[in-house]
Image (cartoon, rainbow, N blue to C red; front, side):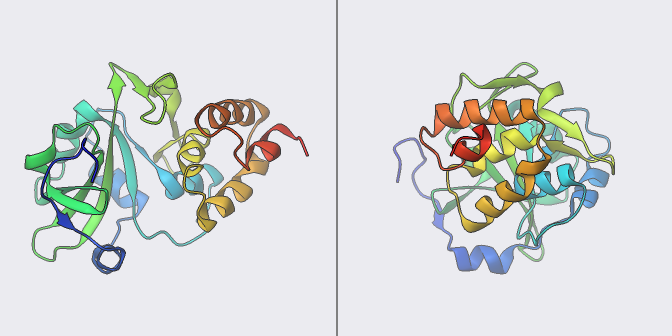
Length: 213
C-alpha cells in the first residue's frame, strides 16, 4: 500500500463492488443536487454519454466531480446516506480519511441495504479553478470544465474525461474514445492531444488525435 494512504482500511474486491453497486442515473443525481450551488458535473463514462446525447453502453456506477472543499455541500444535500472512501483496493470510513489528499473517490452508501449509489470525485482546485490530479500544470476554470447537456444535466467536458480514461485503456475506454472522437471539434482534439502527450507520452490515441499514421 502506498505511503500516501492511511493505515487500516478493509480490502474490497471487484466482485464485492459489482454486487453492492446499484448506481443512480444522471437524472436522479441532478434532481437530488438541484439545490447545490457548488460546481459539479457527471464524470467518466456517463459524462461521455451526456456529451453524445444518448446512452451508448451499460454503466456499472455513477461518478460526479466536485471541488474538494465543496464535498460538504454535496453531503449536506444527501443527509440520509453514509460515505466511504475507496482507494488501492481498500475502503475506509469517510470520517477517518477525509483529509488524505491521495484519496478522492467517495462512495455514497445506503444505510439500510449497504448498496452504493454514487461515487464523488473530490478534486483538487484553487478557488474556482480545477487542477488535474495527474498533472497540476493542467487547470481549467470550473466554468470551462463543466458543460450542460440537452437534458440540463452538468457533465465534465469530454477531453478531460478522456484524459483520465487514457491511463487504464480498458476495452471500454478504447471503445469510448473511438465513439466520441468523430464528435470532437478540432480545438477539443488539439487540447486532448496536448494533455495526453504530456501525461502519457507515446500513447496509442495520439495518432488518431493528430491525424498522423
